[in-house]
Image (cartoon, rainbow, N blue to C red; front, top):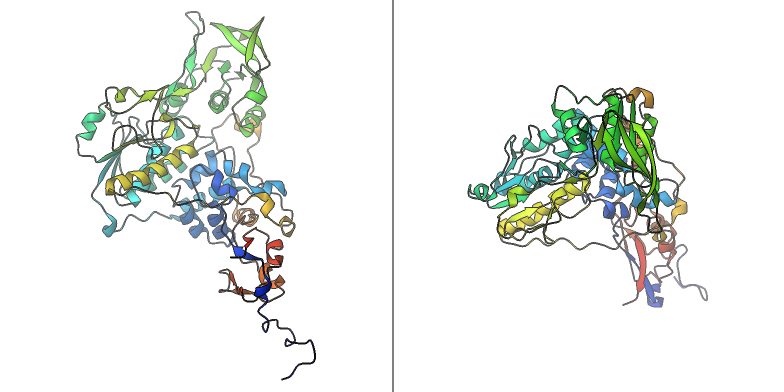
Length: 542
């Protein structure tokens, strides 16, 4: 039908004009890397499993999570959650409680009996891999290698699997039934675990027919420091002490007053354990101040709630039976502690040294191609040592020493070992640009502070090894998952579809995103301005 002058469109429609011809820029849907994903040392696709969790599909969330990390119930308890430090939501109200949701999923899996699927027969390669060390890095590598179809044997010198997860982290932080259950799930898919089997001859192990080896012996030797001491002084190292607490029926006798020397998380664990073993007083002595203390804030806070005392800017000069001499320190302009010449005496029945840990690398002596320097093994970007087919990870290579980093090393090494065994080098996929806070339209997100996990009351927990921190229930876990802002990735909110003035945004299918009909998009950028998660960018016209 003929239109009056200057009227070219039917009412409510712009489809008669190809307005795209006016455009100098066009909107483009993009997938950005969420900062939580980037911050995870284990390489979890956090945003994806949070999406499943907020939909109430917890098993799908757990299976997505365990594609990268086989220990969600463990990590939900011991990981220091750098993902939350990176979370954009922290600039709106509080970071998403990712670690709490991870623990909920892990506990759900154990309660409901979710299991890993063993590799299908057609995936089996017949290739044999030896993993030395049953700690987080070794078990992670074994898990991923087995899922890739290889035959995996894990050997460990200890009587139980877990490495520093068992012998370095007290049970009030990581209950042993949780640890045992998540280890068993790995052996259930066909990983062979040989305990009380110390590998002292690597060349001999290689001669057994293994086609690749992953070294993950961990750092189980406590560092010592020269402290003059009387013959009756009782001095222990924290690593051996925590190991004995785990393995011996008769727990170490520490006395009424215990001093722990050090400032890391191991020092905190040693002092808190001493209280649980009956010490009336546990004091942490550290050479620097709180700002320089490497222990995590929440660990320090929990220790103080349990009555642990902290003595800053102090160093131990002499130890004798029932007492020790402490010198006060002062920080110089570089932040390094300097002696002041001021001394005081502390009553103490025992001293626990928590000054760091080293790996026992004696079994590598004489192995051609493997370089050991400053107490760690040199590896390249593929986690391979200088000896072809021998890889290493965890605490025995240069890296931050945490459980999560170790798990990530195991996954990374497994992928490169798989490529080595197949004769096809593994190439990691390219990473997208990071979804920074400035790319989000945050006013769409209502304030919703995160759900806090309950703690046992301080005085009560100081006398028991019961778990200190409780988990979230289903309601609070789902609420927490829904706080995720889906940074950099479309979650089908329909904003772009609703605000486009030219009807150029089309739904591909309900809940599965959109596409733009560029014949009608005039490049106004309204969809970009109103995208909450920053998944649409304006780009120059071709």
